Length: 321
Image 1 (cartoon, rainbow, N blue to C red):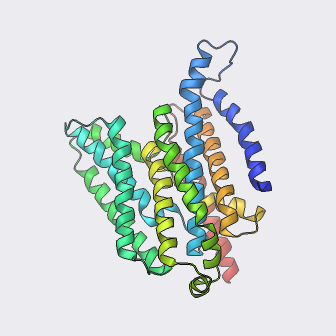
Image 2: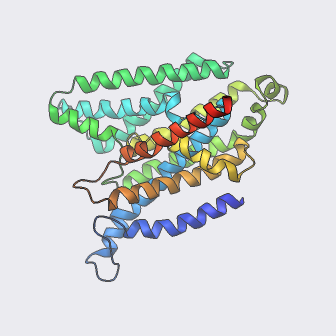
Image 3: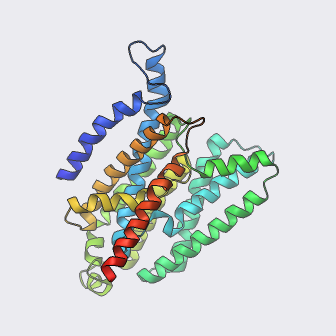
């Protein structure tokens, strides 16, 4: 186990107990009534879910930046997150229209179908031998199409309440999540991270260029399939249980990269742990802010990620000057 991973594990071990106690009302395990029930049924599953969703987004971001050789790549680039959001929004729309659909159980299923549909469309467009440029353009097209369809569904919402519910869900949050959400996200996210980690050696070879990677025995089609499946599982499961939470996959690899040898294979696992830690701390922050209502986690990460993205652009511009 590498030194960055050990350090992140120590930080997570410290952060988890703090996240269990922190909130609008801080919990004292000794004096607070029903403290054990609150901790075990409300705050612990929320903390575990933050670690899982953040880990999936961090690993996906590291893998994509390695494959595209672009430090500005983010999981939303492939269209898988917008595809998962489209499936979830469609569930809320059907429920608002009076269909016999229970959003609590159907929403994760539809979100995963949306992610799977985006994955399949991406694979069909990019093909088995498509290069990085075609893969990126296909992802942008899928994201644009999913975003347009999502906006269409929102505009067709039967009433203002349904529209507000859909928009609020899209903002992303871990509020009112329980163990059932953890059981949905855990196997899918862990499987996705395992797939991305298995793609690490091929990503290392592709850092030398596509032709060099082929000469080293890397099959671009197989690598693309691993990335689509791994990203679909990690991002799709995260969107299914938490909504859209952006910028984690962009920020985390940059924070971790200086502490590794900068190879994609050595960046995926540290990025997963760092992503979980970042989302756990961000979720703890939105709970303790003195606001009338809890700030949505997706908004908080966007407020953090947008300046970070701008700083990256400025640094890249200076490097090109």
